Image (cartoon, rainbow, N blue to C red; front, side, top):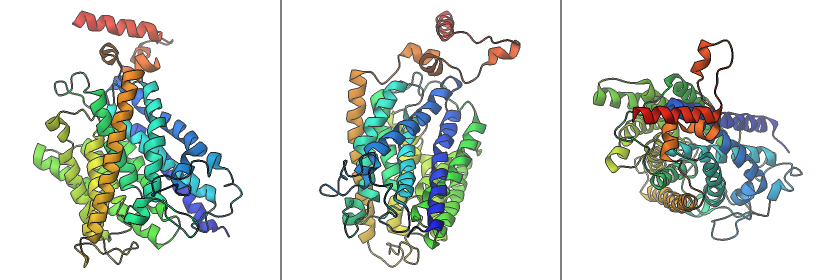
Length: 443
């Protein structure tokens, strides 16, 4: 029998998580230069459109179909096109219509792909990005979601991390954040550095957009984490409070590092600290106490604030710090379960600092590293093949002109129209030619 209260909560949670992708578009869009804002936002909206379709066709079946061997892959044909699920009264978890679970997991797939785009801002062809997004979701995200989120039941065999390894990942520290962060690093290496990286200032062009985006992400993340309880119950309530506490603590941790290191705390730091805390608490929100969440969060904020500088030390251009925030934050949050999990929390896991041993810690480390290596290696291969065939990166000339004008024939800000009562927006070809002529004159 359908539990209407739980179903209502999951549908609302799914809508909250869906809002996170437009929130991410604002967050990323404000962080890039003005000539790239539309392309940056389009990569998020493109992922939303494409992954939604693929999830319906076969993505859900690959992620949550009955395992076809070794806990690595669900049966792609079992629920192809979501066949048979409209007739199912409740999901395998009981109480939820199957389609409610399908919708909830769909939005996780969407935002995971969208997160990767921040690593290659300013320089990726939109068409190549869309091809990459479809391939990556198919051979990386859908299988990893099976590993992490598909639990075995009496008549169903799920993934190896959830069942055989028994690592704790409540809402996606491995499947979402480590997965996306490792992929972002690989793509940043494939595409190379932006023109002027390390020599020119590449400041965010609109910090209010960044903060609005961060606020929407924080709002939507309560659906992300508390919704992963798949019921309106105590586990959801604990996850909700832990998400609030860890995120607030991470924001303070990031701002403190900025103040001590640079002499001032910034709005960009506050927004980034919010995301760092959200990322870190995601795998652990059902396993730690509220005090543990504060400890986890403040360390995450400080750690990620320091980690965003790694790209300059090691020479890779992770444009919007996907590696520093999502990979590092995801690793810390996942591994921290082995140190900070409280047996009184809903997950009921004993950690090293709460009466346990290293048993849960090694499981967390193995799960995190397995996803990291799998995602990084396959993303390198996918990115390299696309770069060598259709080309992944725009030309240097087009990068100078601006990817919005060249790729989308649009501009985020039409300042010319401010001086005229009529439309003065030039044709895309004219705008491109004028920009190139200006560049040549300056050169």
